[in-house]
Image 1 (tube, helix red, strand yellow):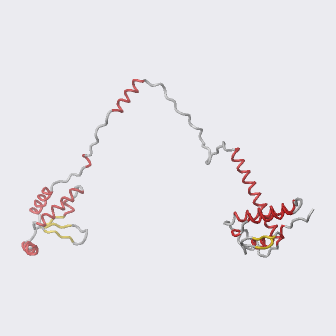
Image 2 (cartoon, helix red, strand yellow):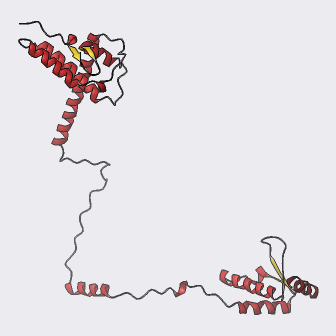
Image 3 (cartoon, rainbow, N blue to C red):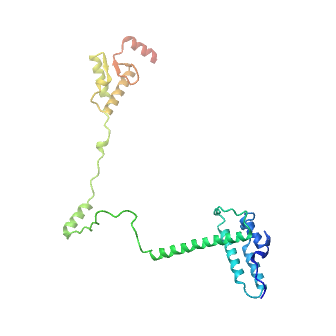
Length: 255
């Protein structure tokens, strides 16, 4: 029987690397070469080709190679995940192989745990659990109804089938009193008094009536039948008779 195959001395001739297998492992772990550039299938073909040239089966070499190539496949598949914080730049080829084997063992344990969880989920899929606390009171029984008279039930259904009366919205419409009514009211007040306070004379009126009363004031002021004064913004509005001079001034100013 020929000598055993040394996996570390396996010579490779790849597109991105040429040399022994142990050197490739060292460069990969030191991140000096990316696994994305390595075709692992060519490594497997090279090992199988060399194995076929030997007589007999070296199980130790085969097992070592399977562990290393599986670890490389696992690292290549998980290339998007952050690497473990391990100083790999100073590892020797033997230590690099041990580190790959350790990572493969961890991956196998995680895979076995995932398989166990999947089995438990399949066995307990028909079980349900409450997300919140159980109610303090017992569940209420479904209410039962006594037998009903069909004629009474039909009469109630006929009442429900009657079209309801139309809803009137007349009470929601705003009622605006005529402006002429407040025009005469201001004229009568100014005939009896020389000065009138707007707020006092509109006490008890609605907001719509107050607005119409103010429009009547503006109409009388436009016709120069009265004078308006206000000491400051939002101060009381004073209504008075227009004097002869004020009337002439207003007429000249308007002209």
